[in-house]
Amino acid sequence: MTQNTENVLDHFNLFRGQEYTEMFENKKKNFEYPHPVEKVDEIRDWTKGWEYREKNFAREALTVNPAKACQPLGAVFVAVGFEGTLPFVHGSQGCVAYYRSHFSRHFKEPSSCVSSSMTEDAAVFGGLNNMIDGLANAYNLYKPKMIAVSTTCMAEVIGDDLNGFIQTAKEKGSVPAEFDVPYAHTPAFVGSHITGYDNALKGILEHFWNKKERSADGKINFIGGFDGYTVGNLREVKRLLDLMGVEHTILADNSDVWDTPTDGEFRMYDGGTKLEDAKAALNAKATISMQEFCTEKSLGYCREKGQETVAFNHPVGVVATDKFLMEISRLTGKTIPAEIEKERGRLVDAIADSTAHIHGKKFALYGDPDLCLGLTAFLLELGAEPVHILATNGSKDWEAKVQALLDSSPFGKGCHVYAGKDLWHMRSLLFTEPVDFLIGNTYGKYLERDTGTPLIRIGFPVFDRHHHHRYPVWGYQGTMNVLVWILDKIFDEMDKNTIVPSKTDYSYDIIR
Ligand code: SF4
View 1 (tube, rainbow, N blue to C red):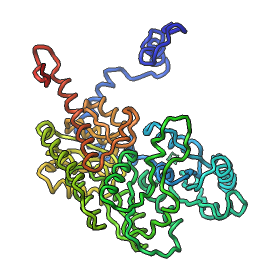
View 2: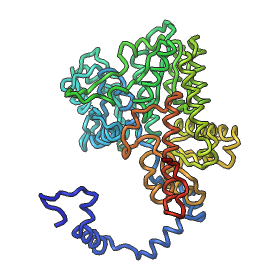
View 3: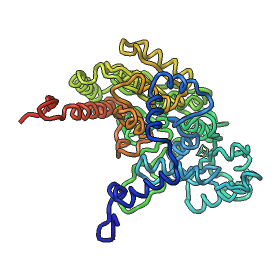
View 4: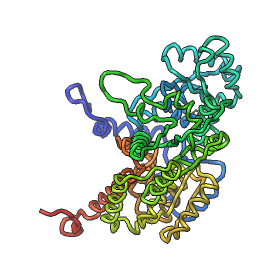
């Protein structure tokens, strides 16, 4: 036996033991009947070339490893950002298990969310009874202040009417008539998690603002969008706004619930936008979104209500942060304090210190549309070349915006943008037009192993590196974090490439 009670092995070593390696071999031989190794190698090599790339880019009816998730994931992300709010997904349990595990693995926190547990009978007869029972159970068991409802594919295919179902559930006493139950239809077979974010946020704003008169005040609403760095970013934004003396309301503030302390108390709900503040946010002078393509409908609704709106594209870098702060200053009449100016100077200093290592390096990147725009702008600012930029959930408008950004810089020449493509397309790009580094989420790990392109993990989800979500990527200090993550990988690779004694070990960067 490879292990026994006296010698329990970690899985890293356990599966290398003789009985396991033999078992894997036998499984392959007796059950998988694989093609000969030479044939597999031949086909694999063929898929690395231009001929295969053209076939790959011509495919229409198949998506392989898309860099996006489904709408309800974004709806849950929004819901947990409100005080005492329980996300309630009308649909099947398995979907909700996936959202919970995705968030828990990324943020390393429990993520509370319930489903109406629709099964075969509900799929045939509709999910009204599931909604009636589900709302009653959720209300009585988990004592929320608000329940925010969204839907999975299943409920949308049947065509369940959320508004009618919630009204009926209230009439039947599942929750009190005046209890807040905002909702959004989030069909998972169109759009992505960013569409779900937008629909859910608009649903909550409509719930609080519809049929209300606006009486304008001087406050600013701030929306972060679907963001893997929400814990660090929202705290950083609050710090910057407080330093400037800007009165603000963060809409969907999930920075506390995904960073609860270990002190013996389980917090199903923590922090979040106060429901009273969400209601009063109707009166704000303006609403700012850090992610344009994630908040199109929500911002449209804010404009309908008479607010000015300003949208950014996940701003990272000196220029992008300048623009963000100057817009805040314009909207509020507040000056940018010397303390923040000093942070800017420190970032410029750090970039100048390291520019020789980044300038001219080629990058491929993928992720959500706004994140890709923000990172592209920062790479161009550093004199790096973002050669391949891909967003599975990117639109034609997004593509045009990235192209305009590339056209505005000499470093954007020869770079290309790909909307609606997936990570199997990215594989072809990396083999046919290799780059120095790949930027993306944990799913880029396969591409790193397959193509040998070192992966810098930035995006959502990141499972296999811990705690980066606690660091901001916005503001001058946040940009410093992104700069360091990029540089760390560059130096790791440099060390790996200069490791043979007396032959290539000419790059120590160590002195005694
Ligand atoms: S795509 Fe549909 S079935 Fe899959 S997790 Fe999303 S809602 Fe559920």
